[in-house]
Length: 85
Image 1 (cartoon, helix red, strand yellow):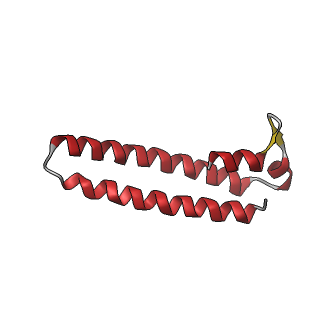
Image 2 (spheres, rainbow, N blue to C red):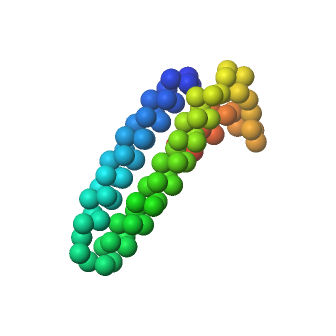
């Protein structure tokens, strides 16, 4: 698999993440206390997922050809990135 293919997969995942983050922000306007708590949880969770995806993106973008094919626990680096996604 090529680095550009993973970039495309990562970008599509980020697009889905941004859409769910916007939905969580819209539900904060509810007057129900439990809905506000759920919305805050979603907002917090989406930020954590976003940070994780950003860290994965940085690892993928900084990986050279040698790192891309390096084996970690009997799996190549690219395959571990794929499974993380």
